[in-house]
Image (cartoon, rainbow, N blue to C red):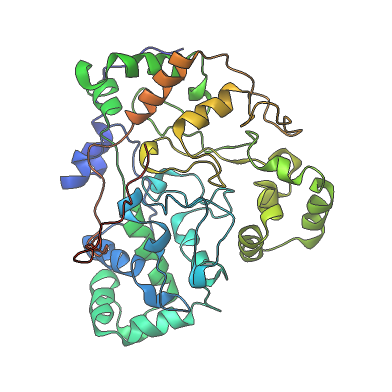
Length: 391
């Protein structure tokens, strides 16, 4: 167990963040930016517009923001799994874009190494945006006067010089600026503001780094906290669905030697293949049923939880871990469960304290994209539909 540091986290802010970004940066690590894709305001604005453009789907109805909506923590909650063109559903819960810039890899199984690579796949996945290839996107941006000007400002290229690689870089740059720190936890742990957390949340913190062992994977450092180790673990969610099929599924993947694009389609369209987790990417048996540790930052905003959206509340998440990787008492323990998962023996009050602490990881301010659609006003004379997220 390490002691709480009262050091101000200023180095990353001073060197990498300015303006509004700096105000929201407390507690975050240095922002990784590729040398060949520096952040500029023009590129961020262009990426924002591309991220919200529904014309880049086969039906003209789905954009990146459809599944990563700023109104729901850049996810598509309360849906368990994402919904794409024509109401088609995949197999995975949409991870938040918030702080995705700090991920060592993208997607639940880590099949993309960075935001630039990740940005290309949803466009051509048959249950997401459904394009046959990326050429329609290039055709649209080349012929659109607004995009012509924006690509010139962002990359210094004329319309006939625009490539899909420019599109990828712009979207990735926009996503890279969707960062959110400065939570009550950050103000307390890094800012030295003692009253930023309640007594219950402070008890939850001690459990988090101690008895509950959450910090083993959801890491906290002295100068910053990612709340993820970036690794892949089988925590007992979903894998029991394929208990009788593991051998045949694994064998098929070993023989097929699929490309990243083929894996992308397979795991989002085949529920059984989806549960293979990291194995589908690396074909290493240590990765069977293992999924990436998600960040816990802003976790209160991004229900439901787990790679398949199968656990609806933070309370139930804590119960799952308290049961030793079993969601419902009496369910079988996964044959491939990570060695560190075991019953925690937390009392009910301790579980409540832990949930209270996780709610202290919600940032004081969430980025607001320029091109995000405003929430629709209720029709006159009709009751407003309740779309608020259950807490």
